[in-house]
Length: 388
Ligand SMILES: Cc1cc2nc3c(=O)[nH]c(=O)nc-3n(C[C@H](O)[C@H](O)[C@H](O)COP(=O)(O)OP(=O)(O)OC[C@H]3O[C@@H](n4cnc5c(N)ncnc54)[C@H](O)[C@@H]3O)c2cc1C
Image 1: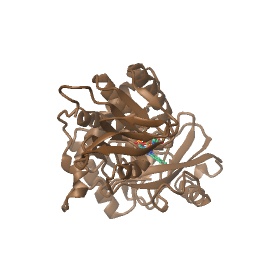
Image 2: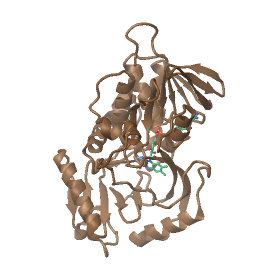
Image 3: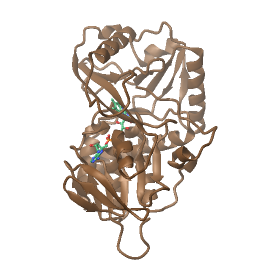
Image 4: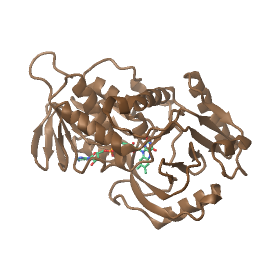
């Protein structure tokens, strides 16, 4: 896409979440540009400022394990590279299975993870309290555990990337709504924004839960679906829990922050779309309190400090959408990350930058290109280890 001759491409990235900021960083480092990042809100307006900070490499698709493993490496050196402590703590991820089907699922995940050279393992019910003291094990058939998974604190990652891209000469425009995508003769020519027209030969759709709306503004129909997910943080207690604990049955997940708060959520059906806004519901508070106290009765006296919500950007197969849309020259997808975009962002955004630069990537287009939804086909892989 970057022109071999003639004026350089003008790149506009919609969304200043973790995907948009990381993509801008990779592109600026490669000397591409000029680059503008536009967001209608503030830096952590979207899911990037509302997530549980979980970073795991346990997946059932090999390609996702690889993106996650590369991202873990980036997060491990993030502090040295960007000068911000993101409190990345590799306390592991512990998945819990209560049925034979769930156990088989975890066994399959562990075999993929191990074949990728990671130290994942199956866990017996009696081993669980070693990782999560006080956890009720009745009804458990087993679990899986990977020590190098972990949690981080999302905000400093966003602050660091913001500072980095500004130093790299990227034009960051917060509080600027993108209301239209300009198209001429099958290619992108710019954006209509609340602050006027922004000329662009490349538009990166990193709009998270609003990516479907942005694609529609470019005349493109995509199957992405925003779904609201709720989450809460409790009062702090003395640190006792190392891993992120996740239960397959109901998507319950929780971890303990370094300040001692328990942060987590669980699956609760909400109508799809962004119209309902990012609110919390008493139904979630009740369901989450019941689930948490049921599995860790010692938490029963804890108060909830905060509850909030944000949007997952889901795709039908649970895999993200990365790369240029074959229907519109210059329109590049960086979306569809569901409930795991923060943990995949460092590696995924590098592939988005490669797509913009028209460099070869190691990504399987059958898995990540929007093409997979445009051409009918069967038997394609699905990433089924979704939670929250
Ligand atoms: C409750 C919850 C828990 C989660 N837990 C985890 C977790 O533990 N680990 C993990 O890896 N992931 C988790 N996720 C998912 C993760 O947060 C997201 O996948 C990731 O942050 C997506 O980043 P993004 O940059 O693609 O989108 P976002 O961070 O949503 O950013 C998109 C941005 O685009 C802007 N935008 C949209 N439309 C327009 C427009 N028309 N004009 C201008 N700006 C626009 C928005 O304002 C927003 O700031 C969770 C998500 C939620 C909601």
